[in-house]
Image 1 (cartoon, rainbow, N blue to C red):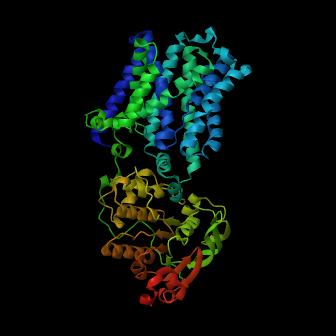
Image 2 (cartoon, rainbow, N blue to C red):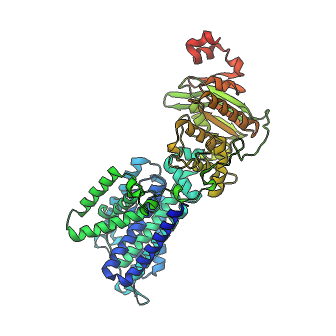
Image 3 (spheres, helix red, strand yellow):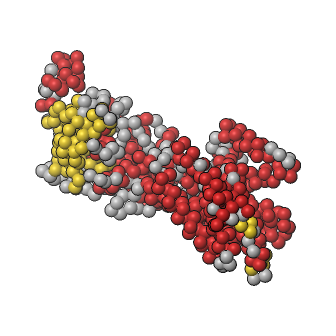
Length: 596
């Protein structure tokens, strides 16, 4: 962790906790109530940001978990159930609701997900108003006066300290989440779900888990709220006027930053109180306008603004996760350019590693891969060529289960791929690059390469071990001096090198390389060819390489496969395939005679 940032953050957190803990004794009822409302809002804002800031999903209906938790707590407490049991019931029931909702909601993405979750707010408000046998409708649920004191202590004070404990808990969880495998899975999902699966991450359980965690945290806040204020009705906990404020808090401070929701909650809570006391109307209009202006001119939130980052203390609070954490290697390579931490072995050239049987992939009436049948032996380097649109990348997408073939079968290492998920295929030993690189843009080079190491099937590594091992892969790909650069700061060729290193970190038996050499200089092409040969000769990795730079393929391939309009038209030794009249006419066109 950055020393200055660590000290500033720790000191600020300690001071805040001490100040907030002392308020009920020195601040009076009004300040205590205001601070309590801030704590509740922060818990909801931070738990919302676990899904948005970490996983990239905009859940505009997150506040329903606050409301459901509040209703369950109120219903149980009104029946005389002990307070601790009320909190447990609220958390358990709301967690189940979050889990159930995850199944339909996570079938949606982007704006569709956001609008679907937004619709949950009026739906829950309507249900709460009409299910009078449970919620007492618009009359609301008042808690009994007899329960307003516990062991001689006003429950408002107890609820205050429970809210403070919940705030500390969600902050601590956010710290842990930024350092463990689960948090990195969410970051990969935020960047690119398909690429996350291709490197071995099972995405739905991660999304389900973070949804449930957020629901439970919000339900505790809801329980604290109704325990303190002693009354609940549908509009109080499901109305849009209150439900979107925690979302605004996280976005205002800086979604995805450790301190973002907290700073946003402080500023927006203070602004709300000032406006409520000074202006009798339009307070939400003014707050909304301010947030719109910040979104327009500081889209990453206040803590990401350039002028804020330049300030001594606040600048440290705006640090991204990789700037806060100490990464193994301190951002420098180990100088070993020719070794990667993979088992060295000699491939059995007589053994079939991959077999395609009548593989067909169609999009409506467009057949992209047409009845392809072929075998690839262990340790082969196979070139795959064909005109643009001939089905090369589609074939790779079938092999990595990005697409499910409409017919045919893929048999890899003696096992069928039928019914397997993308992450399972990766863990079985298929690594790939993309024609257009798809690294995790806001993660560093080192973190990108560490991702498959943390989620490999046989022996997943912890974060620190994976980051340390990633250094060797980065060195091998020529990125040893760029470990701490974000992937979106790399040029195109460096991104291709990063994907190559990340694919090798999947510990593949079969490596699918999609036009990595395009745009490289002759020296870079030669170096990459040496890498391809080395991963086969030293580590026994079988390679299928799609490439339009024929001079690169000719230096290393054992076989050449040619596709035309999705159909296999040639398969054999390079020199034999290049004498095929159909290949010459299809692939080289008017250059047929000169090539001959």
